[in-house]
Image (cartoon, rainbow, N blue to C red):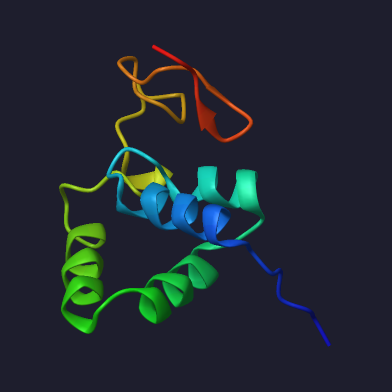
Amino acid sequence: METKPKFNDRELDRIIEMAWEDRTPFEAIEYQFGLPEKEVIKVMRTNLKESSFKRWRKRVNSGVSTKHLKKRNSDITRFKSSSQKAISGNRISKR
């Protein structure tokens, strides 16, 4: 039987934040937290209001979202946007 990882509140908030960001692909969340897309969806379903979850799923599955690397423009080869500040240890560096 596979055990599900337990996340503290801070990690859970970061997972949800990354899932909301259009430019952060599911692969980046899996790389950082070990959660595949299906598990991210479960996290979002259990931690958001129903209307917020539906809005998020609609956006993720639309053509606008770049949540899936396969849907991205092939010119995008990184996980973060060029305007994003450096992130170290899951914390944004001081500006």
